[in-house]
Length: 254
Length: 257
Picture: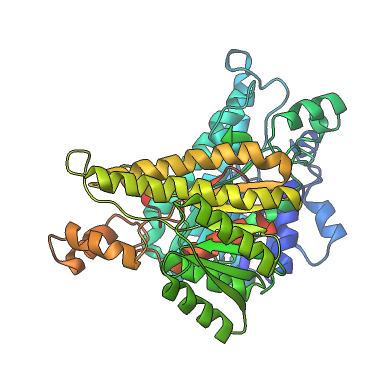
């Protein structure tokens, strides 16, 4: 059976993705911060332990994607159990606290924290799985970037810059590893209703203001992003590599 | 898994060959009733025969997409024969040759007419029906030539750039009517359309031209019609329900470099 690893798979897009990939017949391993860990509660995640309690089908490994030792140990555990990794979904990501706003007001530690999760995380996780994928002569690294990697989100300097970096990291992997039959693609969601965004979207006036800017007139649900990850993971779009797949209801088409 | 387009009436322009034929066949396997529209009646009929032989539902329609009366009549006929159109794949396109210094004006006009005006006319005809029936999905055919310059391909590059811009414009205008519009920008696909270009590029040697072209693709091969048809299916289906105005590039990594 094909094996998929989903980082940040305990909530939001990651959780929907883990569910969909399991439905599609993958062995899915979720990597997420432990529930009692740092950062996850403020970002709205439920944490790894909650998922393992709620859904015993799901293999869960507590992992901090910003910590090389934690990532290497998690990947070793996956390989010990399943012997292969076919798909890595670099989904774990944060927007930063509300203090991470326009550039000159962004606290340096918030900038570093956003880049640690959104850029260093995909780097470390991809780095950990690539030797296995090279050996397999197959694999697909799917990184959840953001439409903020293509157009700037107002008042979100660190997040915007980090998603631009994640996008180009994806292209770099695509170009360097195509000869090993490894694909790398990014998904660029627009606004999605998740624990990371609900603090804004649950305020009626803010939600209306956001949805007014989206041609389809609504935000996405996590499963609409998970559908695209599943299509990529299925290998049906085998000639697609190095691509930013934009799923934003037309936001960036304007 | 079949059934991604169950019960949908779809129109595939240029369905008589290459990517269009592959897409028509795939759409039919996924449950669609497929109108195969082509300028060449025999080509459309051959695609339809293949689909029907495989147990699918298809209808051959002859039209030149640069002729508005012909396009409107073709869509009226499809609506009457199969039901209201829900999916349109604007696949039909023509090549061009030459730089701005060497292209002929006739070639330029023909390329822009088929690739841009043809897309406009078919989209308008389909959208009128989709607006009245709760929406639909339009998939346009761009090219990596819309994103990067391709040598001696001036009119083609310009036409495909226009299709990408038209896609965004349609996405914004038609979203309130529930119509999604996206564009595929394939890398080089080995189709009948491409063979003369490969021969020119190889200095008269198609094999050499092929090798020179493949060298630009990190994935180490050119695309197949099926590679692109699968992307069209994804965009046409509800799996892409939140996608509109998007540019999707199945190009084996060519533009990632």
